[in-house]
Amino acid sequence: MSFWQELQGYEGFDFDGFWRRTGPEDVRRVLAGENRQPLDFLTLLTPAAAGYLEEMAGLAQDITRRNFGNVILLYTPLYLANHCVNHCRYCSFNARQQIERRRLSMAEIREEAGAIAGLGFQDLLVLTGESRSVTPLSYLEEALDVLQGYFSAIGLEIYPLATEEYRRLLKAGADYLTIYQEVYNRKVYAYMHPRGPKRNYLFRLEAPERAAAAGMRGVTIGALLGLDDWRREAFFTGLHVAYLQRKFPQVEVGVSVPRVCPNAGGFIPPVSVNDPELTQIILAFRLFLPRAGISVSTRERPWLRNHLLRLGVTRISAASVTAVGGHARPENGTEQFKPADGRTVEEIKAAITACGYQPVYKDWHRLW
Image (cartoon, rainbow, N blue to C red; front, side):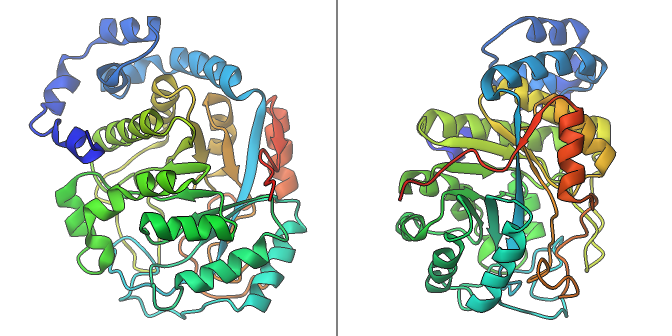
């Protein structure tokens, strides 16, 4: 069964009724059990579970330490280009926006890589807008060849590819893929993506599988929280992670929890996701997905990230710059979004240590 078929199995499911029917006794039953199933996970996302965050946090902390030890990995993004042919309503880079469009040259990529590596980073996430004409595979292959000389692990957050194309980038030096479905509700997805290749819901939905089949070491997925009902979106995201773990047991499957941030277009998210609700999502993920990495980016404020460190998070970004070429030349360009955590790398490392964890730059070493 494909994941799309699994999703279709929930068409007509009475989510609102489930929220109403679920009470404290149901939550306590799930917390007392192990090997939690999808409806147990859904129980942990209900309003009734909001009163059990402290108990969930204790379990989540124990599960995380048993599966991931005492370390939290630091990574940072590098934006290669902001050219995009999509019209995503929530993104500063969408084709309608009148912003300066840039693509880094190989010399500029070396400059950026040097600035980032100088901060100690060994794990890099490479991003582009979605434009195959401006950032074709040949450009990405050349960029990866440069970046291999600076970093031990390189991730991609780019437009979705075919399996053979992922193989090409894997051979060129990529290690893992990050790709967000943005929103699993297909009707909302169509509204949020009115034009451009990203409008193809199924091609994007199946991209993590194609990357895993190509041999990527890791795949991280997520929904952009705020585009639709957060409980259903978190539920479908968790199901997607569990599906990928079953189908590709050799792949490190992770989840990220980005919330919509202010952007150049002034998009207002239709659904609010407050801090306690984000906390509940992360805790539910950890209790349902004990082996999944959980990433929290600099979209979130420092005090909240400090709080979340103890609740199941295994990866956090630091020193994030969302403008093309912004590490070496901070005055450059339009940001995709404004990071909320502007602390230095050393300040974030100190915060991790103060929480009783060990910050690390590297948990993987390429042997070729």
